[in-house]
Amino acid sequence: MPSAYFVPHRWLPRLAAALLAVTTLPQPLAAQPRPAQPAAATPANKLPGDRIIAVVNTDVISTGDVDNRARLFALSTGMRLSTDIIDRLKPQIVRQLVDERLRMQEAQRRKVIIPDQAIAAAIRDIEQRNNMPPGMLRMRLSVDGVGQRTLISQIRAQLAWTQVLREQMGERGNITEADVDAQQRLLDQLVGKSEYRVGEIFIPIDDPAQTADAQRFAETVIGELRHGAPFQIVAAQFSQSQGALEGGDRGWVQLSQLDPGVADLVTQMPPGAISNPVKVPGGFSIVTLFGKREIGREMGTALTLRQVFLPFSSPLNPQAPTEQQKQVLERARGISNTARGCEQIEQLGRTTDPNRPVDPGEIRLEGVSPPQFRAILAALPIGKPSEPLVSPDGIAVVVICTREQKVMATMTKQEIQRYLLNERVELLSRQLLRDLRRQATIQIRT
Image (cartoon, rainbow, N blue to C red):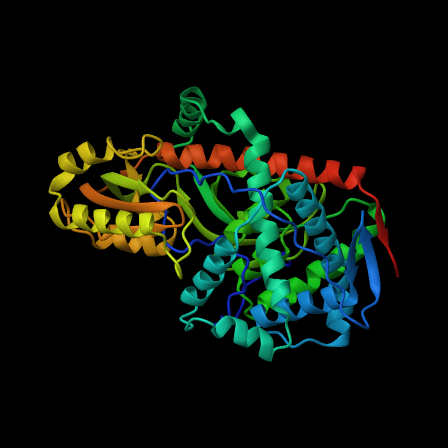
């Protein structure tokens, strides 16, 4: 077996920690989230007896912050903490907390707020993903000695940074038809060649003096992955790329889109393998291979659909819906019960929210996310409207027009748009965070 990777011999069910990108229920396809409303910053809390180990501009990071984050990592992966493990995790945890402080400070400067409802929705989704009753996650955190603020701060920082990047992208966030056509022509030339679905945990190195710490941390993480820790959860907690929000999943990529060291490795790896640390520009990568296929020769399920989206006038609080939101739900139920076929849904859709596409184009079922939405579309009879699908900013009703098995020649238009946008967002995220570090006053105390 090549020394660059390892195939885990067991996969154990674990409690998913809160770092995967989560929503209460699926938003309509191709819909863009509405901008968050300005919000107050999360204060840096320092518990009695804590020792200050870092100051980021004016925000304090204490030993309690680091210990709580280490416990959250242990809870999500199922590993047992020891003094040795904490010592190896500590430098990377401190770095992660520094970056979170910088991201939140930038979000506060831009008056970005993440409503408490969004945090609560994320926690509910984690519980649903793990078949936990409401409130169980908070209880588990308490039993394991993890402060709830640790979980909430991490979710808030991720959501706030996503909003910052959305604002910073501006017009660059618009993927044009010309962009899609250019990428499509490139893909057409690759029919028959292999592509790989790759997962990545990126561990950055800004200072060469940090190399040993980063490698030691990577080796600790790899040890847990090889003993069954879920890759997506570990990536969501510790990867420093925007792909962390998707559990480290980079999607289907060609070798030319990967760093040469990673590209050489994935051609040898069987699915499920975990790499050793791979040196890449800016840091280390830990890589796993989810799958391999030949471009343009894969069978898939192609869907066409129509959708009606009924917006809320304010973000949804499931525990206290407004009168307007109740009325929207009743209207959605009426559409679901009485509408017939794609033509009628299309007519209704054109009279509701002009910012939402009534016809999102051909969709590849296997690429629909989240899985709950994929399951709904897979089971929905052709021509029958769905039950109301609730998201934080409105309710959708969809109807399947066609469903067929066929060779999926290349990526769909929506997949190309998502891929190109993710590339731009990742580049922007790294550039903006690098600028924030350069401008900040950061004191690390040993």
